[in-house]
Length: 351
Length: 115
Image (cartoon, rainbow over all chains, first blue to last red; front, side):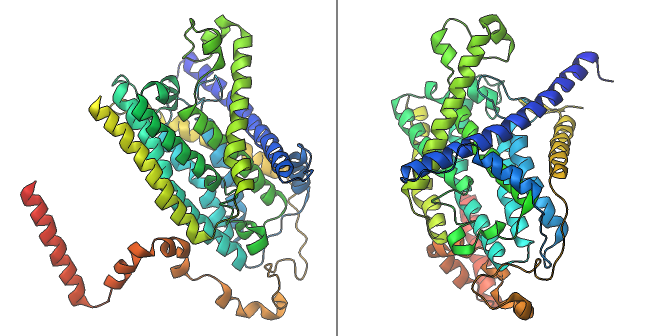
């Protein structure tokens, strides 16, 4: 039998999760709008207004969802739901600005990395089940893309986790995102290790466009080539869900990068004497403005990460061929991440 | 209800409950979208730009779909320096497989003898 405290804490979590879901979708679409506007301006175009993604979703939700005759209906309709579910669920495991993860203690970084593999798989399943050759080609590319970026992503995250695990108290779980957040990796390493962590950070930022299927790794949709790829046959609310899923995925992955590599809060610098490495309560002592400052700082960090990982890379590079994608991720970027791992390891052995 | 590991304890039931809750919220959102679909003659045909009309062509779709063995094409193409010798090793002759089995066995035993 559960006591009242446990029950009320669960009710609080359920209510908060609703708020986080709404916030995740809103922020995702908002930043997508900013990304589209900034990318357009970098290409000397006017670009759509920032609220365009909201209009797109609203419009798509009113259109009818066509299911192709050759499609496997239930898979075709289920895939967009799974694609949106996974990043929204991951959002409950990631520290949002100054707040600890909502589901802290109910899963850690390993679960997050597994859940992040779900949206590409859902896209691949949806594409394969739609009975269109373009979509099957897009699905094939999605699977290849995922197999390509998982290696550098795994090396990079394990480097951080291993280093934090070897320095912090044995009773702490180094895979827990709140532990990673409380012990920033840059404070755990010396000069050599910092170079290693910098290389690993570059590798993860390079993984970002692949994870989100953005240029130069937009082969999955490649509208000029394979007519939208895995999403070629999708329309209406199904397409709206994929659209929202890609927006939320962008927020989730950027937040993950922030919580692993840049977890610093602005109020720590403004009020260095107060220990804020904890949940909400210490903030109430500090006043609401500290909460506000850190939240705004988090949103700014999010914007910078999205600008570098999505807008800047997307505008600067042309789309790779699909076999070059695997080459780029498995050879140069994986080697970069591996050198980072070795530098961090060597520093731990020597010093 | 909690599972205890060396440094972690967690409650998988609550995790699954929350996953179901998130899925439920998403389903509510999904239901808010337009669910109508008025079927017309060519609406359900797959989109094939530049090809002959699909209606006359539909029975011949198989050659333009991707075969299972081509699913990882880009991956194998990029790492062919690694896959090429592996694929060449799969000759289909039983003698060759037994040869590789014995070689592997020898290597494992040599490694184990040093360990």
